[in-house]
Length: 45
Image (cartoon, rainbow, N blue to C red; front, side, top):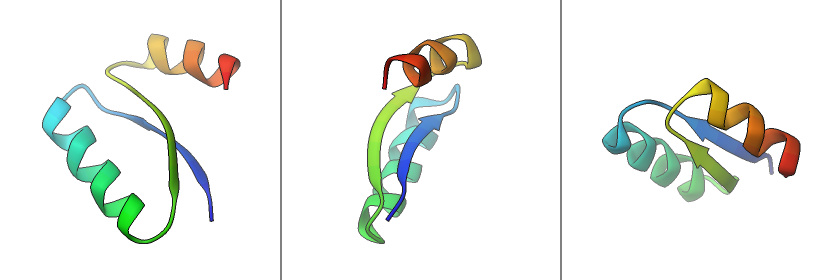
């Protein structure tokens, strides 16, 4: 399935999104609380 970078400012929402996506077979490669950190993580992964 897909490799996913989860981005949301709410830690609770990131957790919920990660759980749902993992349950249906997607790989969560990283998570970030904001767009700037997400871009940095995207470049690194």
